[in-house]
Image 1 (tube, one colour):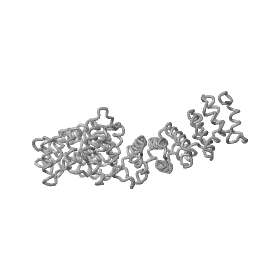
Image 2 (cartoon, rainbow, N blue to C red; image 1 turned 135 degrees about the horizontal axis):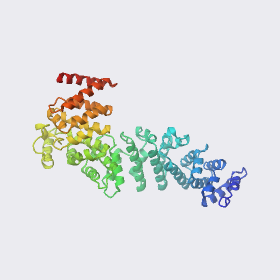
Image 3 (cartoon, rainbow, N blue to C red; image 1 turned 90 degrees about the horizontal axis):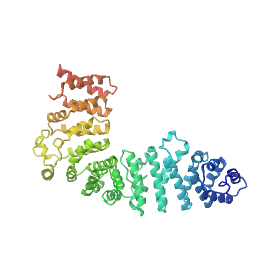
Image 4 (cartoon, rainbow, N blue to C red; image 1 turned 180 degrees about the vertical axis):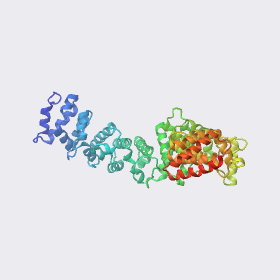
Length: 511
């Protein structure tokens, strides 16, 4: 073989010659695909005509030409110089590979090789910001291309090719956040993924469908839209089956929990599937998993938060048994875990018995599980009707600590929970005392001075409720006055207006 013997130039001249037949070129490529290729030979093959002809052969009618070209390109992409030539060439390889992939008449092996090449390109690319990348990559990550690839999940009969296709989609979504944004606004766009998860006979196909769905959910904070087919009940039941299957790998269970946390809210049929003791037990196991990562814990808490929305009292009573664990997570969890935990506590703190029968169930639950003893100073006699008491659960201190963390989402969630202690059935004076005993004045003033705009509003509201308390430190009161003065120069009109009202009250009080 000429290339193997170091005769690259004669090989290229013969291959590129106008008189060379397609059969001759196929034969030469087959030989080239079989031999070891060193760096020197690879450098010599960086020939524009050779690369252009190889790319053209991907689009010809002959299956043997396509196959021979694919095998050689696969070998050559291992070399940086050739890789750059192929991917950046004007007649780039990527569109040709995508066309081959979408060709229903292509042989399964050609489809397989094309998928492997595209997957290799995606895996070895850097995380992409498409505006800064060569136009050659835009087609690979484009909405139209991803939409077509999703549809191919339904038409590929070969499980190996379907797995490669799902792996390719996973890489595309991982490398570019923007590539999956549109999918959340079209209810049926993910239908092929859900169908693969629910109905595919191959377990590995189902696993990769789960991974792709999880990647989409993890990247974006909005709810995942469910398609008209498969039915939402079958989809949610599939996630629950994975979550509650103790024999599955923890990666799959965590992914199922992560997706459950992004399911649509306000749907009774979904709520009924999720709000069961089996689901709660599985989430509790995840939260206490010995080698849990932040991601696993966040997924479990996100799913639990979703389950507590629009929930019946019976389910919330079961969730409230996790109160000690939840309070601990306010101190030990990641910022996202703390945020989810605070929002769960917010849901629990606002729940109370609304009828005599529910009151009886709640009273039995409190005696058996809470053992809180005397009513707290904040809720008084109404404490008996509450599902949880944040004061007796010792949640006030970690919530106060949490408002001061840099993550604005977690901080705002903590403010929301603390605000439940100022309800109409609460003693606001006792609430103020509990917050101030936890060094709340210092933490909240810090947020008012340096926090993001949304949490500064929350800090101002809370300080307006507690600054009149006798135990509010005098030095912090002076600092509060100074901050209110500085806010008169704020460009945010509403914040400035609220600060002005409080400043007038404060000056009037101290004068």
